[in-house]
View 1 (spheres, rainbow, N blue to C red):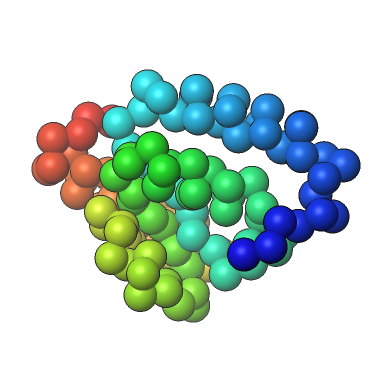
View 2 (cartoon, helix red, strand yellow):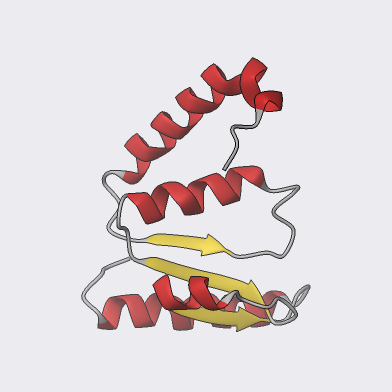
Length: 109
């Protein structure tokens, strides 16, 4: 894979952001992430996902029900719950199910 030279001007800031994110994740026992289909606009979420994966954190994903989860992501996710986009009740219920799954596996909220 080629290095993206377009990132060179912001690479030092990006590296600091990644290091800071990794330090903040250090005390977390899991990574709970909202998985969207639009990573072009959510590069911070993409980087958090990558950092959590590299830190071997269990990944718990919330995803809108209209998003297709890639097969490789399904393989590394500890659990995935879907919600109806724009429906707060659906989001809250999916969040509760996801946290219940994490708790059942020994992780406390």
